[in-house]
Structures are given as structure tokens and as C-alpha cells.
Length: 323
Image (cartoon, rainbow, N blue to C red):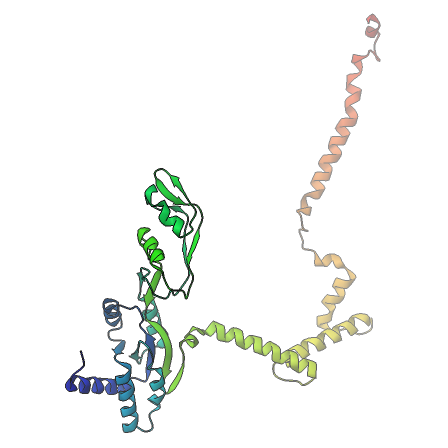
């Protein structure tokens, strides 16, 4: 049903007011998102963001009209974003916070015939709950089965649908029989507009840790290039100082008539390598002395044992003559 002139004017006023009030917004895609799910998203964002949907032609016309009234406004970049089933989420809050709310509001959905699969669908092996009379249905889909306890059981995991393919009637029927809802749909973030800058929503995945890691990698590359070129920079000076200290230490150790305080400990280590070992050397060596003493005592007892058994063959007395 086409909108009346009053409704259109009201929509234009609302859109222009949002463009003037908020400096940040998300361009979102709402394919396969129901009205109830979208209403729940609006409730969750209440007080933090405003959601505006509409026909692409109306949104483009409103943006062009706003740019004509405000020639210096950078919102003209948003005109090209009005393609497909999209809408806008306006906010002045932290973009990361709003992103978490939008991405968390997803709902499981069944596979509809003819729809494009957003992801692969793998049906796990095991009981299906179907009676043996439906074996032909599984054979049509080339799924190996067996009968167990009066029901059909799938022998292996089955890769039923590949991402990007259209869902067939047989595939949808099987998933419905197994009570599987393989897909989940929600608001998809496409673009981010922030104070006149428009960029892909993936940049929000760049956290402080990612930035710090990338900075350290770049710093290491810069230090390596500086050292190789022999051109000192702030990144390479610490490495140059360490390398110079190593060179001085090597020369000092080879000289007997010259040393310095820091080098003394290294010279001592070279003269007496045992200082590298801890006070209780590896492998529990601290108890080795006691074990050796016990072993010596055992040997002494074994040596004394033959002297106490002389009566057996009569080597000491005449009693042995009775034998």
C-alpha cells in the first residue's frame, strides 16, 4: 500500500531530524529478519539508538534533499548504500556497544525451499526417529542408513547443503523431519558512518590488542631495516647499544689486564662453570651422598655374610666327620 503524502512528509522529517541529531550510524542488512525480531531489536536499543527502515527510493530522495539543504554535510556518501534490503541504525553511543547488541539478536530459522543457504549444513549421524517405511526417502538423498530398534539411523555424518546453494524440496523436507533449524538470521552490519567517514563494518573487529600487535611487528621491521642499512633510528638504537655492549664484553673477557664491574661476573662464570648450576643441582643430586653411603654399607654386610655360615660343611669342627 503506497504511503500518503502526509506519511511521506512525516518520514522525511523524521529522517532529516535523525541525520541532524546523530553523528554515527550503521548501514544494516535485514534479509530474512521478521517483524517480531526487528521489533525486539528496537526494544533492546531503546535509549541508545534509533532504527529507521524504508524504501530505497525514499531514503535516497531524503538524503539528496538533506544534502541540498545542507551543502557541507558529508551524508551524501550514504546515498550509494541504499541498495538491497537495508536500513539505518542511528546512535551517539559507542559503536562497539551497539554492534554487540545488533549481532546478539539472532534467531534460528528452518531451511526454506529455494532460499540461498548462508552456511554449510551437516546432519550428524545417529537416530532419526523415522520409521523403516521412510527408507526410500533417505535413499533418494543418497544417505546411508540402517534400521536400529525400529527406527532409521544414519550411519555417517552427511554434508547435506553447501553454502551459497539453493535449498531443494527434499533437503528442506529432511531437515523438517529431523526437526533441525540449520540457519540463524539477524541484522547484518554492512557499513559504519562516523562523523563524515564511511568504512566497512569489519574495522570494528580491530581491538587495542590487535593494534598493539601490529605496531610491534612494524617496529621490529623498522629496527631490522635500520640495523641493516646502518642508519640509526629510535627503533634501532636499543639494539645497537646491546650489540655494542656484547662487543665490549667479548674484548674485555679476552684481556687479563682490563675489566669493568659488569664484566666481572661473566669472567667468574667462565673461570668456574659450576657457578652456573643451582645450589641443589638438577635431578635431586643433593641426596647422592647418603645413597652412596647406604650402598657401601650394603656391600660390607654382603662380604661378612660367608664367615657366619661355616657349620654347614664342617670346616671348623669335627662334627662334620659324622657325615
